[in-house]
Length: 330
Image (cartoon, rainbow, N blue to C red; front, side, top):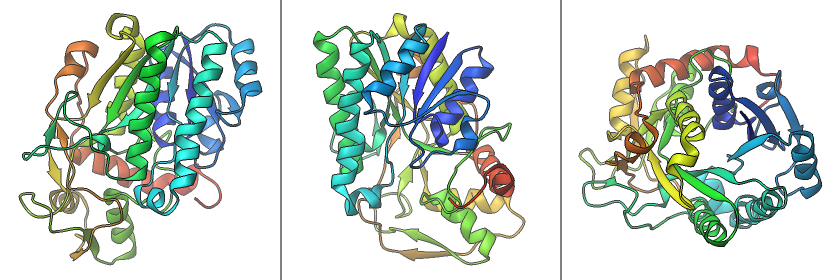
């Protein structure tokens, strides 16, 4: 099987590509390298360019007429940045995805897996959600994902394409073989900030401590990126069995971990514990949620296998080797 992965030179897309290769599925990478890394596409069939470039997408399909599916990971993903630049986020995530869908239809693509987000949910009082929970995206980033899901569902309702939206919770970790990891030297998510604080010998600030959670910090469902990647392999393998027009599946561990608990777990792994301070929430932040769904197990035969501790260790190991894998700033 051969699949096209848009955004396949990014953190998640490149890890999905590695999982595909390990499973005997050949990835073809399309990435404009705005946030992706050329190094993550080395040794793979790679096209540098934009998902909205119809001529380029046409060429990819002409040169690979056996493409069986598309995994659409290309997107901007930083919540505070989406608050500061909503126009840029709607253009990159929604407008270009609509163009991309048109190009896929023109080339006879029948299967799409869309990288969606659990940030679109309205969490209940216990912070758990399933695929039927109410949606209430609270940031421009989250709204771009909700808009894309609705857009793709409308398209799949009448056009010859089926779409599986995989709603990611909170990826951590790296490829256990250290082929890829977070490409940014200074990532904006909680674990990245903890590693930065650890490396620089300064306190880690918990941003937001007034949420109605058990300790006041935000709650998340931290899932190892390799688990996330293997779920895509399962989805590609079972696509025709489980997808009917537009289907959604949560990808999480089913366990809620607060940011403070993540920091405590971090301190059990490192040789020099980080100190914790408290600050206000970032623009666009929410209390968070975790999945209570069993749909991924029922439809894909998949469950998360890696622990939070393993995710922290793999993230730390990647941080140690990142600059030997990647050149230049990022």
